[in-house]
Image (tube, rainbow over all chains, first blue to last red; front, top):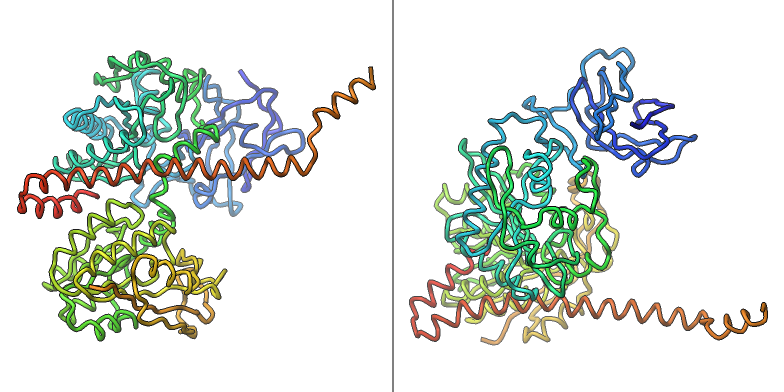
Length: 524
Length: 77
């Protein structure tokens, strides 16, 4: 058992010294809220290690609590004190809970979540039902899936979900051995699951999330990781590439999780060693993957790159949607004025969908496309209630299947159309831009115009650009790319917009904005 | 003995400029390898779409083609 000395806990963090490395659980009033490795996660400080409170916990640390430091593996209490953090004399008990009073803890990535050790059996049962349902659906769709990562670890190690974990993961090993075939199979699984009625969000070419509705109507997302054997290695999306044999996976065996029998790789010892290393039997609530750079490069190169800046945008769109403004943007007004014959307007990267809404109120049938349904949900509901000619669809410009699939579908409406893309070319990647040009060319096959607005390089490091996750683009570069795709730039105008005085999304004020408005057409 | 070590060192010594050149080439090769790897996803996307579209086209079934174009986009998630 490790011993701790020089222990000091204050508003900044925990200082302690130990002869050997030790994994510690931090308990507040008897409940685990956080775990860490003293040496790995600490900074050397006066002969000990100092570990700062993780940012996710800080806002809770006002008041009094009984703090215990417990060695995770042995369960030995190494430190126990009643202390007050924040204002001296504040005797309210510290409670790490959500607004509804549900206890929260930090998972291994120090994210605040409803970890399993805070949940009762009746709360865990719906998750296990969901796991079984998705395993069954994947089986029907043609792959032999099994619980993977922490879920498999918990099952094999003790037949239970791991207390400091917060969700369940599923994996499968494809019969294919080339990334192209593995991706195609993943697409086919997605299609089959969609046919069965499951909403799917794709993470990469080999991993996606399946949404399952639980008994009480709550929606749970389960992650499904694709894997395959290639050149004597097991590759499993997420983190793994290790020397491996097919016989260690197939035929699948079984494992027990919370009393239920579930499929598992044939050799769980080897599978978990490939995932967590040979010490997988020793519990480690603060485990960090040390994935080799070569594995990351392979997984990134083969499968990833279709969710660029998604985290930042998701954060922006998770804020409360503002009311639909009365006035459209100048680009939307130009679309309305300059395309009187348009049978359809397509607002690519429509965000909240305010311009799309305004165009529909002007009597123009409109389709809003954005990767985030959360962004346009409120406007879509309002448009439906008002019976406007307006539809919204989920659309990821960086995925070629989306660009081609939606390009073909929207091109089926006969007659000239208009495409509106405001701050899209400057928000996406180079590949996304290429897809935008191709998509526009398809949609405008019967005539019509593409209206673009994007930031020019003068705005580099501008606060608006940063807060809106925008890069900047030279006008000549955009024009050259469009011309290479057969587009004709009808009009291109540089203009400077003086600050309106309204706060920008980051809460500050912004300077003058230099942007380009461009109108493009293709020969019909 | 010391003289011999010196001569071995000289024989295997890499001039700084040569090292910088090799580092630059490794970085360039790494970029090129990634470019090649990225073709996997693109090829799979194209194959998926072509396969789904080709069948109804080959069957000369305009109704199925129309339904496929509608459904394909819907199922992308």
